[in-house]
Length: 212
Image 1 (cartoon, rainbow, N blue to C red):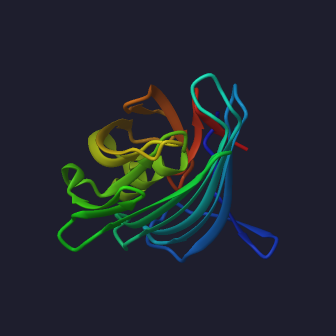
Image 2 (image 1 turned 180 degrees about the horizontal axis):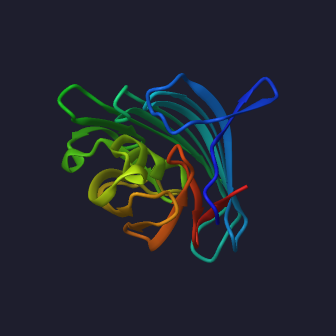
Image 3 (image 1 turned 60 degrees about the vertical axis):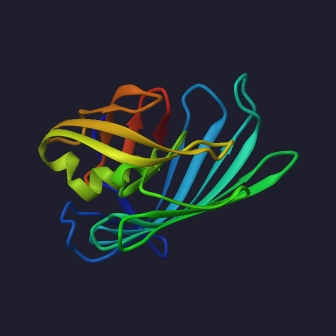
């Protein structure tokens, strides 16, 4: 897939987003569809420089390994693009559960869920990653400028599994040639090459989702 510019929607108009991370803010609706199973994700992003506010939803039909579920999330980063707050609600047929994660000035994470509260470092992570979501890969890609420079990056993340809402420390590795259409990605569940747009948001994640 050829890289495209992220579209910023303003009252029905469309404004092409430039690659200058320090330019004015823009808003967009981004949507992905899984290639082989019934799962979709849609998120509203509000971007100002490297700062992101996002509200999104994942809806998935039942598979052999997971029940049908819906997941609603909210995320906020600071001006450097590092995550400060993340909230998640997962709904199954039999229950609904919530998760809240926030990072303090000491880069420690407070996690609150149905089991209570705990404070952990998650190996110094500054980003959250959610299974089944291509949106969250944009956080380290944009924060570090991975799509704009050649190099290898081992990124510690707060790794959130859905629908069971398990939270663990993990590492996601990226190798870039400095262009948006050939970023090698290795995570706990994938080893592939992804394409992003000029703003660093996923266009194509083989086996997971494609932007529509």
